[in-house]
Length: 569
Image (cartoon, rainbow, N blue to C red; front, side, top):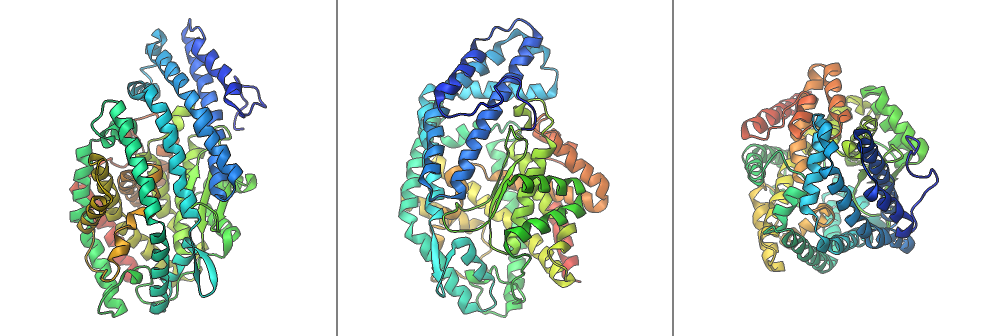
């Protein structure tokens, strides 16, 4: 533990709700007769929240590390069906107790508490008894996506591969092998399309009911408030989509046209988009999870020695699971452990440059956890995703200073950085596609599977470059949205990556101009957690929370300039 418990017994663990219930009852019934008692209540609630959230975290981590283990899945489901629903009414009672106390006013002048009380008020407004069971059911359903995806594997040349491992073959210089891998991977995805469609239909129905119960017309509007999007509107999201369409998509088109010319193909096919544009063999930055970790620590040492020290702490604790394997859930995440004060990194490394990007991305999240650990309340540490993703996406860019630890050859290093910057550009249209799709889905909750397919194709076309020829593969495109786990597990959590990408680019620009000042701004932003508004947190990092067309143009103009410098070497 990062700090000794003051309220709970040192050896207390959760097995059943009955064990936990007494602490929630005591807190909700405790008399508060002074400002000191009020502040003590907040700290004790925070300690209980931290312990409960870490218990759930470990259940989720263990389940995703081995989706074939029924006991691990049962432990997670037990929490979301038998423990969490019982906590919800007490959380509402405690929120009201916090909000209605006469001693609250003595803390409201503190910006950190103002942010905290704003979130409390928002939670009270959205709480409905009718939604407790629905939200529990939604969590149980959402985890099925990981089980379905984790079970996907393919046979290629006599070898059984996860889809992440098979995707590495899309970087092979042999076009026939790339084509084969692309078709095998997507055919395997299609085998589960009906199951994933049905799962998604169930999720949409339940989510819509949650919104209706709270008095909203649709789940989109409910989530905008539930996610605490106090600093921008739904219309701002649409404006950002437009900025991406007009500023970033043309840059993507230039990159793909250059790729097509370099490869010398009459038609650029979807299986030609991951191979090196000069048809060189795939980069091999590391072999296995052990080497990935060692090189990541060395990379962070170059950027900031304290970052490397934090990774070593995680390694010593065993708080990493890096390699792809059968039965492991897809994707990658950094899970903050509120009581331990040390986060856990989960990913599916298969030896590619993309894995390096994922490792430093999740490493950025991990540094955020370490830097904000000192804050008084657990709620202060839970930065909004528009800020949390700045931590990770900025690390992708500023860590390039240490990528020579992965690539000792200067030409390979240069090539890796070019791929990274091209990826930064390519990411924004996909973010806009996924976000726009979610807006459509939840404002048309009664849609059919065919209508959803049609809407997806229309939206995807809007943000597509039109360079790659999809002839013969239209049936793959129809269900390509199903690979995005956020749609299933964390609805509406995606536009944040777009906003954060802007913040990340701006921080990287600052670091390139003045490393010490740039890094100081980055660390200051992270150490504030959620004790300021989003614009104020960005300002603390010496960047702007701005997603206007002109600002998007300015930042991506900078990225384009840096890309051309690298290509000229």
